[in-house]
Every structure is written in structure tokens, then in C-alpha cells.
Length: 119
Image (cartoon, rainbow, N blue to C red; front, side):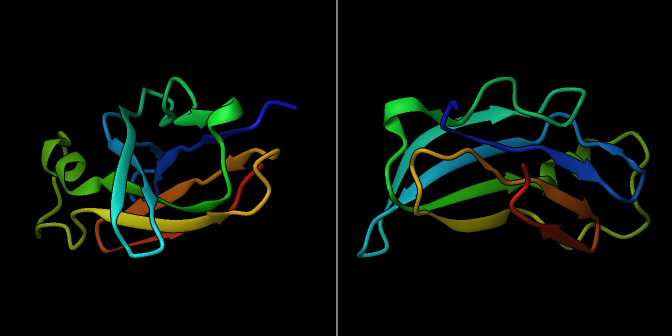
């Protein structure tokens, strides 16, 4: 089994994948400092084209995905009447099994979000 961190973003307000969302992955140290790992944009399917981290680079620890959804909503063709509430959604999670796959999806709308550990 390939070990990796992957994600996708779905826009619940239109029932479609959210494309062109900037997603950043950061490692969080024990003293709450951040080390940048990688960034990518979601494609037409709402997924990043490659894993954000994989293989021997996967280590136990605390990681944070940052989803820049404010830019996504500002650039959408059909804008909301009100500006969206969310700008950047941070999702902090722990890798305790670096031999596993961690798929962290984000479900968004202009006023809220939800996430879970996918498969």
C-alpha cells in the first residue's frame, strides 16, 4: 500500500467539485512552528493532481492543510450575494500511522465547512 496524504474539495452550494482551490500542507512542530511542505491547486475534479506527501517522507506528527477557499469564492462565476464567511480553512490532523494513506476531504459552502478522514 502506498502511504500518502491526499485531498479533494467539494462545493456543497453548487453540488460540484471545487476547482482552482489553493491547498497548502504544513508540518506543525511541538512548539507550534510551521514548516512548509508543499502546495497545489485542485483540478476540475476538486482533487490535487499528486499526493501532497508520500512514501518515506511520511512521518508521525501533526500536519495542517490550509484550504484557500476565499479566493475560490471570489473567482467563481456565480458569486454569492454576500461575501463568503470563510477565507482560509485550516485542518490540523495527526499522522500516527505513517504506513497508511490519509485522505482528508473538505466540503465547503460560503458559510461553513466539514471534513473527515476519507478512504
